[in-house]
Image 1: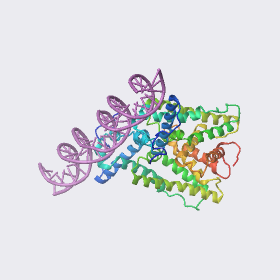
Image 2: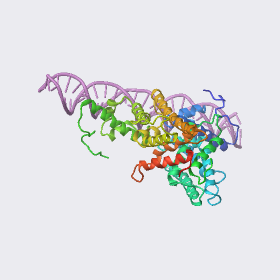
Image 3: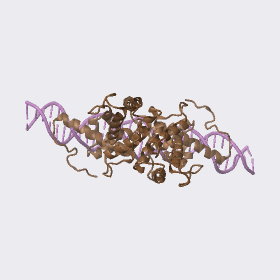
Length: 212
Length: 212
DNA sequence: GTCGGGTTCGACCCATGGGTCAATAAAACG
DNA sequence: CGTTTTATTGACCCATGGGTCGAACCCGAC
């Protein structure tokens, strides 16, 4: 039960005040994301999160204004991992739709196995307050249309082939969003391997020319 | 807000006592399943369900012993829709693995768009009490291995082809379990059409010989 | 009728858990 | 060293919602 450092609750190196603050916020978010994903949002109490960090509940309120906000930040980070990746997606037209699809899938899988991505797809948006909820839904919608557009592009340039791009996108999202429910990074299979398998599965389904 | 029959809350024809009881139980379950799926388990209060039925909360307790039991029954019905279908799955060996796969997918999609099936895949098992939870997980495990076995069979008889049947099964379940999150039977697309699209998507990915 | 069981509900109980506050401890500052 | 600012917490508040209970109600049977 006791974490690695029983005395120094947070246990990071000393930095200046503001950095320290931001750093602790991040730690809270990671922990919360993990706990929300594992036990579910409503099954997780703020005391649970606090205990995992060896701090007290009111301290959480020093960094966040509500349980809801914590969840929202987790979702936001998950979404941004896709929409504002450090290296941007190759622009439409710069390569084939099929290549862009592969790149998108690789990114999305990487996102979805991360704490925040997992939290995004495991906890529904129901829990969020109306305003935050709207923002998250908007973000997801954006990601949805990214994939849809890529598929459409691939159909256009002849590298992909499927009857209904919109529905196909949903099937693909389903396959990927389900990953956190069964995949656990316990060494038996690397993320790269997982990602590769998913890509070949999808490619067999939608690529124009067959390739095992 | 007011339902069709403001006076007679339940609104079915009169039957004998026991049938009436069973019938009302079923109505409660359907309503609960729908509400749980739409708003989420924790966002749904027993009063919500009661109001939707024009009855009071204590009446629910005349038919069920807890909120948890209601959810469990919903899950149970969802699972049984697959495991104990009226017409049993064709036995292994009676036809090709590929044919059995198609049949399984058709069944599963039909299940997943039904109220209970939707509830099963939308609400996590976290909400359930340990005992019921175990039973549900056991049921899901059984369904999982059904699909896995079918795929394996297909690989064995040469009608299917995929590198990792276990993982492939998970991708397929993901694609199907995600359906309730975007598909709504509002007339624009029939369940049969949906089912057919899903099947061709999956078949392109795992069938040995290509067929658009 | 009126009796008796099946059915329904208003009113209540109470544990849970999100959220607050005033008081402390720990740094930073001079 | 005081003093101010930042960080942390024990103790508390209170709305919510699952669950209970006894009274009332309905309805068929004698």
